[in-house]
Amino acid sequence: MKLSAEISCSYQTEKAANTVAKSISPDNLKLPEGLKIKTKVSGKEVFSMIELDGKIETLLATLDDLLSCTQTAENVL
Image (cartoon, rainbow, N blue to C red; front, side, top):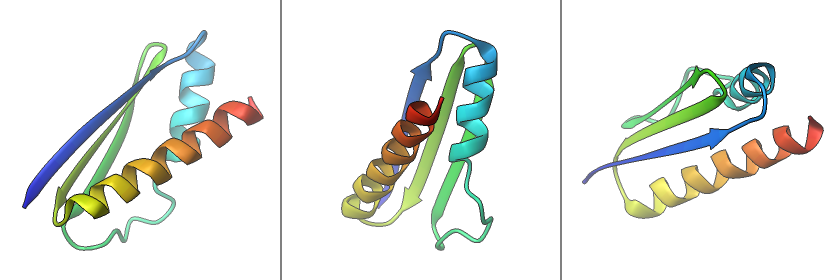
């Protein structure tokens, strides 16, 4: 099944947005087959787009991981 989700987060400064985006971008480009994650910054906002050809459980787990990493990056800031 083809699934997709988008997460957006707003920050007080562009520097904070860039820092979070860099820290949550995949550190390895070898993602599981059928999974695509793209993170971009627009001003003070960070957008992460996830596309998956697979199970909803995999999408939910990916979203959970991404949000957890985002929270960790925010806490470090």
